[in-house]
Length: 88
Image (cartoon, rainbow, N blue to C red):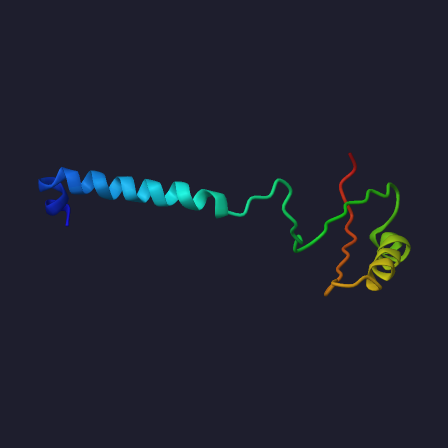
């Protein structure tokens, strides 16, 4: 095939023109959105609670957040982690 187009440059140019023409004609049918709608696979929230232990954070924040999200539709799983961070 390469040999054919090397010997017949007119055929190569015609093929290039046809591909360009098809691209220009289909340009109007391509779906474009400025702000496309999508559903992120997860939501992450970071909360700093100075002076609280992970158990206190679990009891006071994680349980309340999980209860608030539990009633929402399209939520398959909720997960909350309470960890002890190094002081800043």
